[in-house]
Length: 223
Image (tube, rainbow, N blue to C red; front, side, top):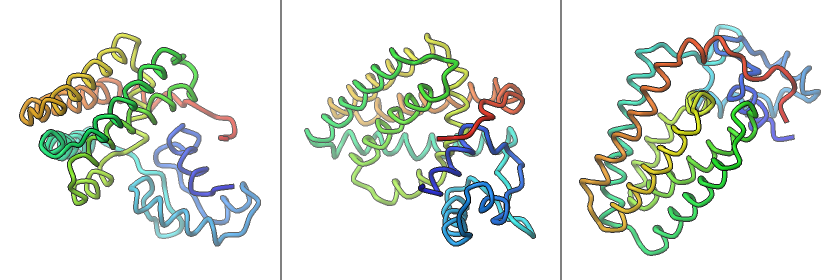
């Protein structure tokens, strides 16, 4: 078992809820393994910003409206800049990777059942694949490092859980606009399109914040 992925999935899917206290002892008993791999996984999850330290143990990170605004404001600045730089530096291979990610994104949307957390998770994964392809095309590893610190997967997952079909299709269409701008080397258009895309996601999270907090997506074991 990959302990890091197990705990991360449990947080993303809501088995371990925001504010929930976790201890090495509890996790070792639940997963029936020694504390050493759990300790290492906890260090990585702290670095990811998914859990925060307590005097004894850790807790799953929770978010206020102000946290969400600040996180998405940073994402907008960083990913908008990445998109503008991608338009300047992209290669044919980069364009192929973005196009392939969008193709997979469309397939995931077409197959998505909104009440099925695992199909929603697939949508989230291929959405991230597109965004990562844009960042890689920017040829700036510093951007990649900083974006990785503000892309909070539980927030993204929960926001997608509340997307209806029309919103998913809108997200795909904006991906296509971003890709076209990058392909045409229109850096300002790519930046503006990415800005709006991230802000739409932020507004959706803020609109459904109470629903996200109160609706526990999963209670059974995470696999």
